[in-house]
Image 1 (cartoon, rainbow over the protein chains, first blue to last red):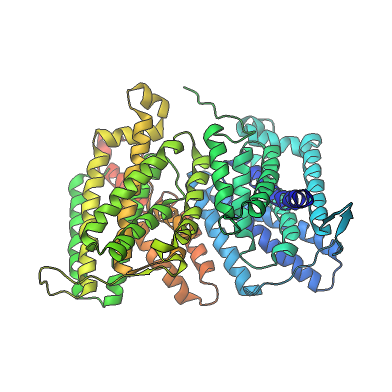
Image 2: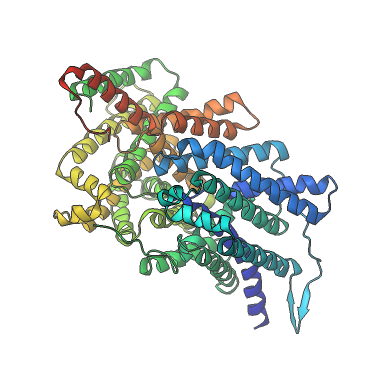
Length: 293
Length: 328
């Protein structure tokens, strides 16, 4: 029983990270109908920047917020410079541009920082927290907390600010929004910036667990993709919940189903998601696509 | 569209050049060109599915792997001559693709992309699991076949001709398939599934059949790659291969048969050039190439050529007034 609770909590912690990357994917998807395959590498690159700042002697939280600012501006610029020229091209063309960005970021990170794994500090104490007989990793709890705070901030931003409203409007109906005086192109850019920011948080939270290296986000991106699909690509809350579900399933399957072990863990998680998709083709919380005849 | 006589002329010239290559190039270069033909076949399969039928697949690396392993296991375990294993691989992939296409019917766009992506992720792990047949992560080493019927060709030359012959055959089959009634149904499903269905197209059957046919092409390509490389291992069929295939069809040109060749040339040679330019960060150069290509030709190489041809023809026919549809 104790193991079960422990595994669920640590599943929730990794699930929160999958959920935030999934949320970043959904934010860009809702505005542009494009899945940003470079999301994971953007997060990885931001985490390297944070590592540089921390090694330059900045305190952790200063480096943390500085990285968020850099990631936001970086995401904004990437949209303006790279994506805007192909805005009206077929979707698959944009996908290929994103894949191009993915390999560039991965390769440049490997070139600048080398492919050797680096430890990344955690802002939370290393001593586990004890509740009754059960021990929880402080970083797990902390990461989950940080993720939830970021989500709450985003919710408030999209729900209660004018800019958030304008962004939602631009995603839902670009033409009418433009007629109302919303600068739709810039809203997309801000969306990319925010997605990069959320990704950077996820990167900095997962780096102490998986260690920092240029390929660290590849697996996480796959899980995030799965989470967003499970929750529904049209539902931000669903994406986060999908992440938590995937995290917990992954952990429990890895712990309790012996013949699967760590090797086939990913396959099993994906197979479960496929089964869900066969019954709910738009994900658990997604809006079904309605076709006009 | 350019008149068909033009297409035939260009294809004929290309074929003559391709037939002359084995007697001018080194064996290594020949091997690379055999790879190009193999990739072209795989891309053709993926293009039938994604370009013509509108079902995005990020998992064709899986069918490539199934084809390759069908050949390798048959040759290694049962000593079947390689010539028989290639159609067998195509048949196995046809069935696997058709079966996978049935649940995929319910999925659209991204959700389908994820389902196929999962397949691509799962296959290498599953291959490692059945160690007894597949040799686990060690893979299977095969021997390169010699030229049959006493032909005076070395193995690389023979394999080159084999790949070229099968590629030409698959091009003819694909363009016949896509030009006729079936092809119109396949494209109609992409453009408007509801209208297609109300015109009497059995969408479910056609979609899963297209999946099967597409997988069969890719499977035959995989089988050929196992024969030419003479080695299969799970790690050479990772997710990156599936993504490369998608890159290939988009760069080459969606919904175009000739695009497969251009895309195959790109995915075979550009990574090598990138490595020549920069040893330190070759993939960064590759990424720059990718993005640059997409900026310059958002509809891929074949799409750009087609557009240029349409413009040229229209300019020649200008006095008669402008007619003709969009390039797609």
